[in-house]
Image 1 (cartoon, rainbow, N blue to C red):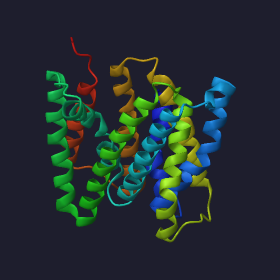
Image 2 (image 1 turned 30 degrees about the horizontal axis):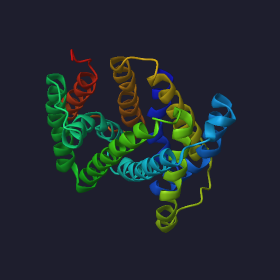
Image 3 (image 1 turned 60 degrees about the horizontal axis):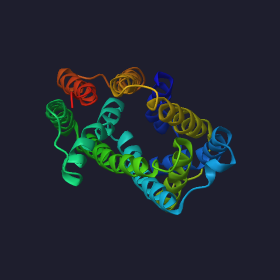
Image 4 (image 1 turned 90 degrees about the vertical axis):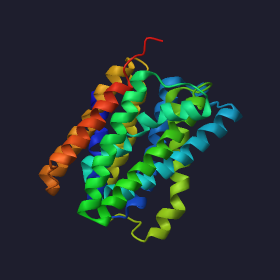
Length: 275
């Protein structure tokens, strides 16, 4: 889980290093990862792993479209706001899932979940408000990352439904394929499509999408939600450190306070409820 989180944490830096547009880097990230994920699914599950029921196939592909939109929004946000904000705000899916359960399923959030939502709302308000003070570009980047969190929530809901008849790796492979297909026309319209330097793109696809996502998907089934939440905090910590050292994005007191509230919300949201 920690190794996967570390691999994912370097993703935003690699997006900035890529010599293509953010939508193109999101597209190549998916396309290069697809054959590796299908190969891993076949190796782990055997020939029957890719025998997908039609209903699960449709759900996994729809989830993949949501993933593609999520990555498009997120990559656009990464190049417009700080690495710390991009990582923290994109993790807002953790807080949006209880809201989805409340609205769509009629589940009443627990006290801990309400506390997490309140902390997250205050933290996000501080981060976004500070970005608005800095520049309109930073504010747009933050809003794009929040939009990414909305679509990542839709992806998580869809992939969970697909997991009813699918193992983790086949579901991830199908979703990645659909995400790449959804991103392709947008990436082509962006302009800077073909990389001259493939190193950041390949590192992004293999490191973040295959190794990072693959390890996290595998580890989630073997760990408690609290351990998962704590391990995922490695991502914003590393991204913030890279942003400070490489791009001079040193957070001020308001950013630190907002980040602390979001981090606290991430942990609280995954605490087990007595129910």
